[in-house]
Image 1 (tube, helix red, strand yellow):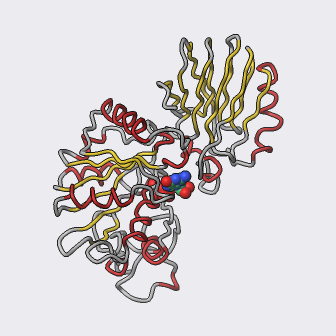
Image 2: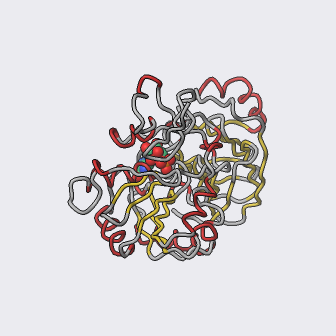
Image 3: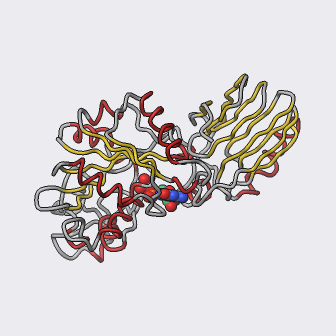
Length: 359
Ligand code: GDP
C-alpha cells in the first residue's frame, strides 16, 4: 500500500492500531489528503486521543526544538511540580527563550497567594538551572490569567514560532484548547480553520503567515504515579477541582493508605498529617500491625482502581526533624507536622520527595 502521511502530524497513516500514531479507521480512508483520527478529533472537537508512548521519540522532538530560534512554553503542574519537570530540559531546548506556565492553580487552596506560589516555582526552576523569561500561574481549566499569557506570548515570541512542551497530564492540551476557544475568533491569532500543517510529529497551529504554535507530544514521566494506572483511572487520581485537605492525627505505629497505590507508616510518637489528594482517592487509617492484612483483603476491591500495572512496592524511609511536605509524585502530598520515622511505600520507581512546605 502506498505510504500516506497525516497532514496534521506527519505520522504514517495506518488502519490497524487505534492507539498507535497515524491511526485512521478504514472506512474513513477515502482520499490521499487525510488527517489521522487524533488530529481530526483535535481539530474538530478539541479532544485528544492517547497514542502509545513508546512509538514517539520525545527526546528527539525536544532536541529538534533546541535547534530552532523560538519561544518555548514550558508547562508544569503545580500539583506535582517536581514530578512534572522534564529532566535536562534546558539541555534539550538549547538557548531558546522559555516562558513557564505553572498550571492547575485551581486545585491548590485559594488562600495561597499567587506571588508566594510564583516564588516557590522560581526556586524549583533555579534548582534545575532553568532561567525563564517569565513565570505565569495559570489554570487551563478556568482560563485563569489567559489574557496575560496571550500578551506575554505575543510579546516574548518576537515574531518567532512557539513550541508548547511539558510532560503528559500537565494540562498541555487543555491549555491549547483553552487558547483556541478563547482566541479562536480573534483576527491575527489562532483560527481553528487554519489549523494544521505537517512537521516533526507535532501539531501545528498557524499564528500568522510566517509563524505558528506547535503542540509537542507530552513526555511520559515514569516516576509519576499517573504512569502506573490505566487511562480510564487517571481521573480518579488527578484532582479536577480544589483539593479539600484532610488532616489525620496519628499516634505511633499507625498507617495511612492512599487508595491501594501508596501507604504511609508513622513510627514516631504523635503528630498531624494533612493530606492533599484527589477527592476520588479514599484514604484509610489503620494500625501498622493490621496494614498488610488490610491491603491483601480489601484495598484493591474498595477503590476500584486497576492496579494490574503495579508489580512490586518499595519503601522509602525518612527521619523527620521539622515540619515538611512529602510528595508522592503524580498522586499527591502530605504536609507533615510530626517528628520521627516515616516510611512511604510506593510502586517501584515512583518518586517520593521530601520538600520544604509549599502550603
Ligand atoms: P496533557 O497530557 O498535558 O495534554 O494534559 P491534559 O490537558 O490532557 O490534562 C490532564 C488532566 O489534567 C485532565 O484530567 C485534565 O482535566 C486535568 N487538567 C488540565 N488542566 C487543568 C487545570 O488547570 N486544573 C485542573 N483542576 N485540572 C486540569
